[in-house]
Image 1 (cartoon, rainbow, N blue to C red):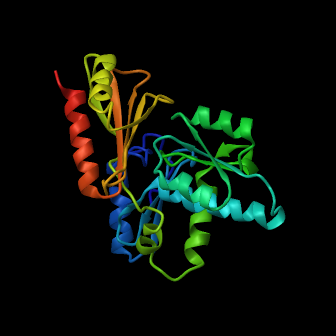
Image 2 (cartoon, rainbow, N blue to C red):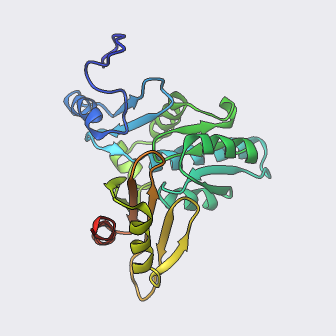
Length: 262
């Protein structure tokens, strides 16, 4: 689609992270009965994937799929190799779970692709994945490459017979809110309100802003959230993940109310 070179991008912005920019692809996938759709940004260092129903596959699921393939590739030639995979702190918790289950070491970083690149070099990681659909490969000089990621996805998808919606579901067991931005008068005050409200309800870390992981007891569903300040604007960015949609929405709404309280 839209193969004509035009730097004004007349059809839509070349930013697949913005949902509105996926609409044409989603419609085309359904209209043509395609098995999948791929959306790249202007320099193809990011790749978003759409399933046969026209629904986006989360970048966290793609990160897990590619990570497992890269782990298997290294293990095939070096069975005892120590393997490190990078992920940022707002990818799904399934990503580090899958990496660890495959016998590799997940390394959690702050958000920002320059930080990922630094960690790729420091740890000699074989792969890195972000929520923003940047995917980094040691075999590509530690840089991000959406084309390589798309080939991994198509190869893995093509090796089995299920539709992409069903295949990818196994890599998305939890429910993510997506990133929600809120303009605040004081980032510090809003963050303090959230911290105080959840002080006894989970464990806290401050790798990048404030992350709270809920204490799972008496059958309470798993959940966590991250509140991070923008580096350039008076914004707080909220990401929530939980075991089910009801829990995600409950935590999301509670945290948003605290952030947006006057």
